[in-house]
Image (tube, rainbow, N blue to C red; front, side):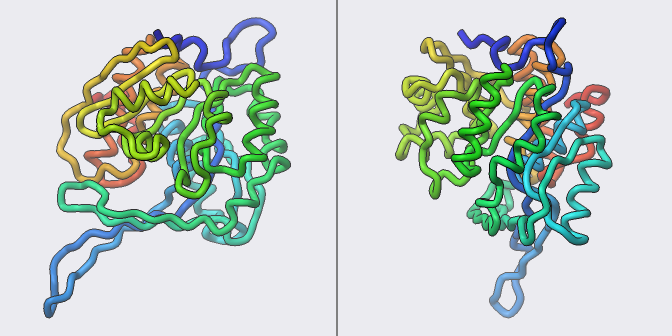
Length: 315
């Protein structure tokens, strides 16, 4: 069975970890979500909703809204656009531990169907290779107090390798958030060193070269390749958790009207981390993660102010 105690750095005398501190390593991205709002003269009319995004940035914001001591580690873009991204996080109490690099904010475009599901998506990260170890090393003073560090696994491999060595020495677990799978491919050696991998069913299938179409089988296939623990989210069907000993469990999703499912996975992982850091048992932590994801699904944005009220106004 999955040992949730191994997913977080322990607390106690002589330990550096702070109770609800969670770090996130990755990218800042400008989201643009396209939806068809009608037609004119036989041509489609599009509505575009833009906002701050990026998996790591979203998770950091969600963590802060859920009450965690969050920290974002990555690249910051000089100028007013980068400053606005950073103010959004610091205004919520999150630490922003970035190095200034020109044109480092990427762009994510996707089409959203009338049912709220993504039709197509594409991302461009112009300065991704600039996320070097010295950038992360400058943040290790803050990270050594983290219960866990959540990393975009498509980040530069050399940087992640150095971070893995540093984290192992200090007893800080790393969680994986798959990104850029098509370009980086499955990084099995890295994945096997992660305490937990959280991914959706399509990412699981891509890592496995197509998958089987069955999330349980795919989750077990990932642990069979040496991953200690995985959570595979399956949209409205919920999630599957599998451990290295071959055990697995399924968990139902909260049933809400779907406005836009983009960002639900980022809320799920933030909700899971926060609940575990507060000492919740695994089942309760997954339920909290499902509630956080449901907020995003019904909100229509990839992050949502309603997360700040989740404990007082549960779904």
